[in-house]
Image (tube, rainbow, N blue to C red; front, side, top):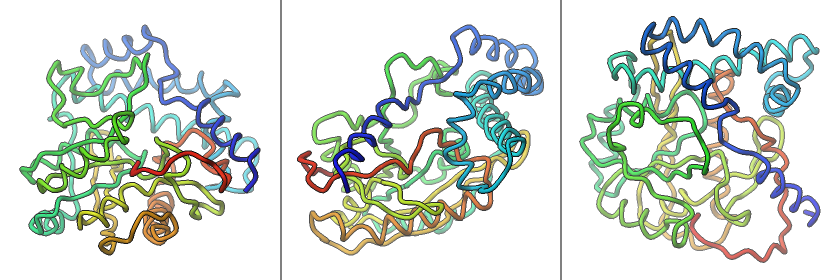
Length: 321
């Protein structure tokens, strides 16, 4: 892989941001609609707002990276409709997230598929790694995990200046999960190992790189090569913790489902290399492809995952994240 491709990949990730495209007053408008009119009023405002944003070429371009691979060969009108639908689904998720915080968790019903399997995995006393993706509404769906009665730890990085609130911030309560910042010492690796040794739950995102380029491997996804992190699989190999691909998706105006799509077992002590973890990252990417085939407009990726080539001579140090 060429060094120019490596630089282009890193530049693309620097230019991508998780911050909301809306302004502060626009967010406040939705919060007011929720307080005084509930979900229906907020959704009513959402439709024209999404239409306005999808008219912007920059927003359609962000949708296009994924949609052209999920729906190849479509014309301009099809691309516009798909961009609108994908953005609208994201908007509904953000409204629902605020709704839970402002009006209470009873506003959303969450069904869980795989509860007994999760309990059986926790009973192994090796901890549990939940590998999620940017799909559905993980914050709303995580409320369905209270039955485990086990502390949940999130590897999560929040950008400075992000005005989009999490549901617990709307509710004015402390975060119900312990946050591990990947920008910390060794990318939070020591904290994550301790969490698993205590038999707790560790939740990470498996579809997006947060750390160094060398901490990912290239796997096939929707007809192209993408770089996905392998830190979760390395942790599983070091600790013996099982991995679960757990995805959420919206099923109705006030309902979500949380589904255990796959359990991934990584053999003990595979070592520090990269290639040994490729088969397990492939299992995850194949599972995510299945999700995208079932719920094509609920995969909220808005950057070019496929522009991720990394030069083998990249000198960045190896770590768990």
